[in-house]
Length: 202
Image (cartoon, rainbow, N blue to C red; front, side, top):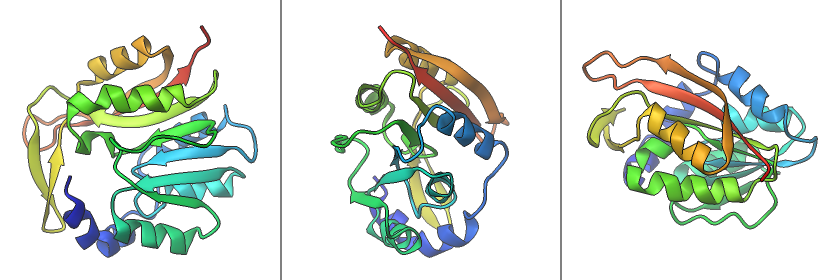
């Protein structure tokens, strides 16, 4: 969804999104704390690779980045040419290399909520016991909607934070961190909720 919109804003997004926001680095550190040096982190919806993938590499890990935007991936390849970058949607991508952590940061809520559980299922299934994933979901219950950014239209849909944590629990994960990055304001801002989850053993 919104493929051409992502391609259109790639350079503007790269200029605007080069540093961490809020507690993002702490969330990512929590994922990396459960990841051995040199291991690969799956970044679904990686965008330009900044700041998430860039930080992962700086901390001695590798990145397998996946995005549906050719323009975003071109910037990611330029910034981090030694990492793996795959052109695919979140819904279609199937992990085929060992990964020891996963990011779905500000990406899952751009696909229909009916696809969230299947996407999370395959991501969790690809991780070893003890590995962690981090994701953002919408902060409130609402219908799917379209909003604008840099003059382009983008689709949004999400389960609530509680529903998302229940899905992860049913997939055999425990919630390590679950907190609002910004709460819904009752208007345009539907809120954003951060989750770090760990895969448990059977």
